[in-house]
Length: 634
Image 1: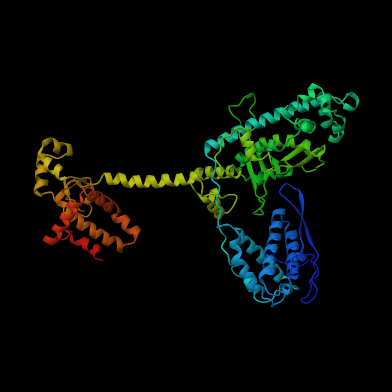
Image 2 (image 1 turned 90 degrees about the horizontal axis):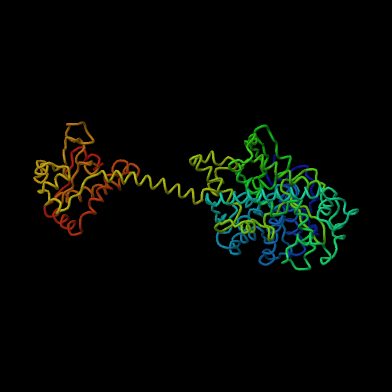
């Protein structure tokens, strides 16, 4: 298969104009479909620009590219906007713009392209991704033209098209996920809404079944009007034509319209109320979208784009073919489903069962698809009353005014922090999966690439908190080790050693205190409770690691008289830290350095200054075993 954007032999293309011949200047039109299946006409008129030849060349590539790739209307407009931006720049800044053409070397369009790209970021806010997107679209169109056998691209443009686009991609502020209580509140409100919707529509169809043909039995009974809308299949405008003026409507019909509705809008509101008793409207579908996203973990557009033939029910599972628009992929995923247990009329709580949710939604969507004459039932269909009095059946619109996700959240009194965006629910599912898989990206990124997960989903608050907990636990482990290190004694503590109670509190006998104060237990950088009970050696063996590991030993007692050697030891560790690799140094000496700094912090500045003077006056050196100098002096 050719790469995306390549010329494909056999694709019907218009006959190219050779350089020098008049370029076709007529307006180009593309009929594109949006995500809801609605068609839109997107136009581009090269005659709007002085560089009409260049605009026509790019317009041809635009039409063929978006038609070939079957781009949605948003992409179609984005490519059109890129052509507008570039051609407007050429009109304003390039000399002899009337002669500009991709097939001519004069004027120099390579220079115009690079200058346009250089100045693109100035037209957007800082960090915007739009400049890189526009530059990429222009390169794609020029590349496609250069690959066409009969459409020359002159000068250095082919080389530019194969190189770097020339502008940074920019960045965007990623959405944070909903907290777990917020997600639970959303799901709870969605379940309550779903049950209310099913109850409302069930009652409406029951009432419609009890009604009779209003053409024979009158147009003033709500049941007869519902029969006309439902089983009777009469057009809404015919029903509206027989409903009397508002003042002549019976109380049963007036009760369907709130008193706050203005008089001019009461009749249309009445028709809307009748339609809502039988069919889903736009705001109803938010609860199904929330629950299906929570049950499947998929993105909102993947859920709302489902059709009946995308779903395959099995005995204990449901298999769904999703469509990822941006990735142009159709992943297939199976979900377990459990049939309702016999005899359990009131389960403890509703279960997020994708198969059950889809069955319930299909039951409500099929009447709409049948009324619209659709042979392929779309899951997310909505009915509304359009002017003057017709039923409009269209796909779900997530940002419809007065019927958006934010409006649904407000109506159901769900407390969410800003921004109120349904995409955050998808990120909540990703965070839960990250926690369940303990951060294994290969398992979490099961419906996209690992790079996508890192760039779009690894910014959530929950994941940052988890990372912070891991770091805190590691720091606590080191701190706990440091607490088990030496005991630092002040001058007052040393003077109080003569008191038997002090020695007993430190776990020292009278003989050990005497040996300690006389220097018998001096190991160099510290004293020692008992050199023959070292945690680094065998019982009864003289400590094999003193004084190098004294600062990591719980038997060590740091006296004020040890301060000069401590300072010398600190100087040597700093020298060693600059010569060893950080990982190697921290493995060997990290704990000693932590404990040493803690011991020095316990001394005052005056004590440290006095010890420094003592080192200089007495020309003291660090007392280390001969084997240690090999490492220190390496």
